[in-house]
Image (cartoon, rainbow, N blue to C red; front, side):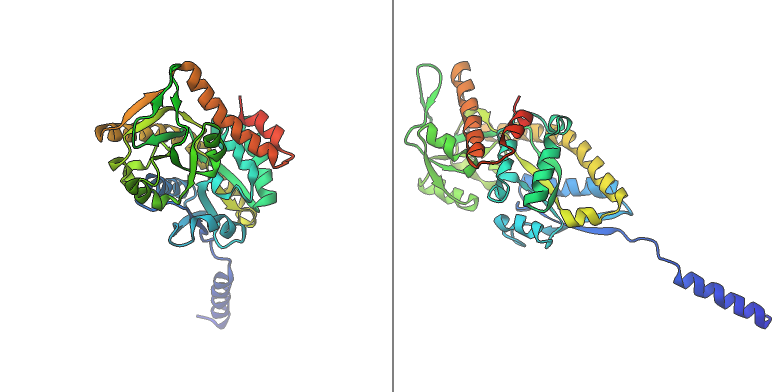
Length: 327
């Protein structure tokens, strides 16, 4: 080979070695507050799988862990500070930072209706300001909460129930509602509910229509009041700086996959609720169904108390949120 040919070959090799490498998948570090054995934790893994299929070669969502990695009530702060990139959690868990999330639990619209009428866009703007986060999706929705009891409730003459004086484990989302109907609110961490029921510290709780059998509470719970009240408010958020740094294709893939997931997820949650009810009934659960008038009042009062709480914060978005999230 001539000297000139050798020099040309060397130059070609050098140019190849200096060419930019193909972009590696962007890592998106995700966390959630649910133990892996619970249905919510399991479904988050399924959601991650769906996202990764949509973004193969562009991004990869990796599970950092659950509450063992970062305590559940500290996860929103970790997202805001960029310690993690993605959070899947009930919005009510970070209401102290974003009080406007009350609109989700008080709502009676679907995730896709909220997207269509601008409700999601409004929440996205609010999240950007208050939590430095992008609202990717309302990914746990379509089912509500019930009052579960260890003993039959007192039924009233009009087909309602009298819960006055009962000690029930509550959550901030429905503390005001419980107070309105005469319940004695008992603040208790979810991991302590089993012992609370076992020792009679509480005679029931407000809880979503899922995960009771995951936690073994069916050993004590034998009555449920229907209808459900409020709505599940699980959301998926992405750290805003991380979101803005993602390639446009990655943002589109994440969004498109989540929009599609929101619709299929509602069906999944509905089926899971039915399966859970059958398991509870097999364990001896009896359902107390309120008659029309009391049922409508029960549901309306629960939502009204949450809307009042949001308005009391003085949020300038309270009216607009109610217009978009309440039919």
